[in-house]
Length: 118
Image (cartoon, rainbow, N blue to C red; front, side, top):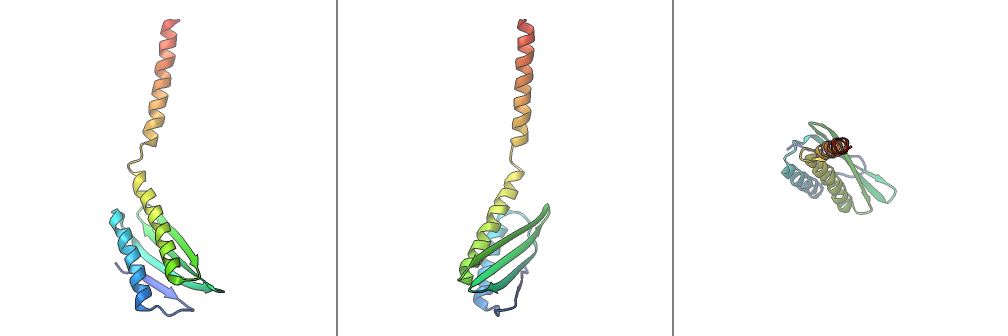
């Protein structure tokens, strides 16, 4: 997977590149295709801000991490992206819509039973 990493105040070293690739390799396990991942590293005052944007078939994921240590900020960004991917993957198997139909059917049955009893 090709990941575009941009940074103005900091040069992108091999350790930074390796950590970002490790985070995205972990995300690739969720069976959701990650399209055009882009990571931007910025420094505001004493804190590093790491922002990632990733296109997925159903939209786009955006996550940021802020910390004084750049590696911790990258970890935060990776955790936020992973939460979003888990939620996206679980939407396909979520049965919330079936539950509302089931409640409506039970209510209709209760109304019919009450009408029959009357």
